[in-house]
Length: 396
Image (cartoon, rainbow, N blue to C red; front, side, top):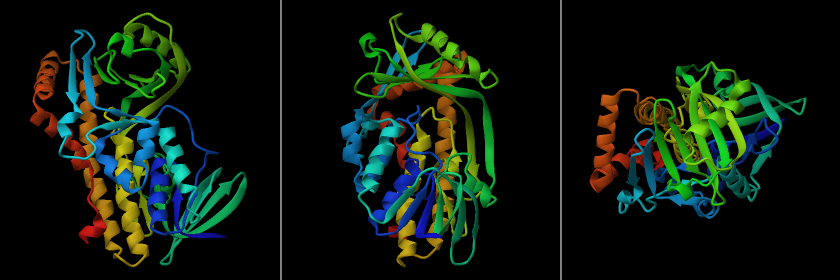
């Protein structure tokens, strides 16, 4: 039987950031992951200023900046009128040491964190390992898994479920996942096309009830992410044709492009009924999922990880009582329900469902005011502050 202080189920960025935070504090960690390695498919790519200080404390920020690039403004483009409204993150100068977002593919972020983890002898990653069941007692948790077709058993004092929206950990501890599933799916595509030549910003919200999209540059080499919405009842086997039809309507000029990858996925607004059951804790999409229009999905999971790894290490090392983990569970659930989810819903409405002309004009007038008033812009971007949870250990 494999034994460690903490077993993390899921080697995505949330699982690995938790592992790194624990490892840096001297805690022995094992990660199990069903996949054979990092999955290079279109997923998260923009990290708001609110996560940067925590990533710097983990030693990751410099690598993120080296492999990604800074984003200094958000651009709203109205499809039918051609109006462009730009909101500058420079409004956050003096309120954060990092007044910018970072653009970096999720697989690139995972590669960076994995590279850091490999320098810690107290971390073990077991790929091709799928959790099947778990049970816990007063002393710890026993996790049963399948590893390349063979049963394997792990024992840990604590378990973190970071295994995504369909979390086996969450199901194994009997926790419900309250919320709803959208009737639309998102289609995320990676494409080589020179939007900048036509005056597009690196990050664009294309506002339209039919052709709404998030169109953003992913890499310095010129790969762009184009994410649009479609009816979730449409057959998946026709999505490739629909991508090209969408491009024909939206791209600023009929020029050659190369479709590199695409991924179609359903969207949800859901949160776990509890983020802690005994010695098992949930983080990231295992704890809460949101539509990704404003990028608060993975960002919320990163903020979960920054506070959870610190709190759990303190409990393990006798520097904090277990009650700090209950505060983690309650606080991160509250933040998602009060800030991350409603904000994501509102941004989705504006970008993809702006079919009420009166409301759209009111939305655009508000954005026009924000664009020219640094105080209003600062208030808009301070939502990132409300996504954070201050250190639970220092507050204890």
